[in-house]
Length: 145
Image (tube, rainbow, N blue to C red):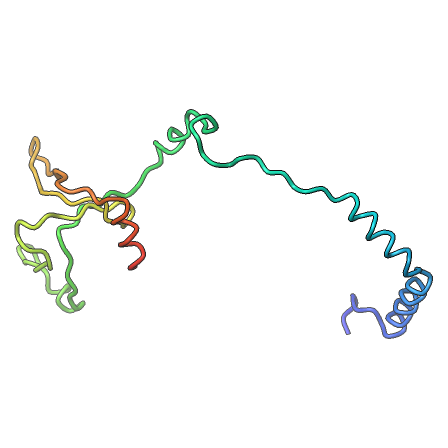
């Protein structure tokens, strides 16, 4: 028995105290307390929480504009065994599942948001967006995952 656990004598004494207290209480006292409590109850009233231009904070979108996200442009994917990865050297070619000339996927935090084509601007690669995924299409793709 742990030090915090009461002994059987202490448990018996506590049980006797509860029994005496319950015997002293009159059933009508409990019924009166319940009735008094129910008389004090009032229906709850709630404010209208539907977003309307009048009750939206003016800078609501500004709070999230500087949150960084991971933007990824994906050429394609492939699965290869580790032994083939260890054999890769400079000049090796890894075949991807995407076809040449096919639009590349633009992902934000791993979710497809657009497709585009590669462009070169000032000796740097970029992507010209050719198709933006609609919100309903994004939701449909999320439900599949």
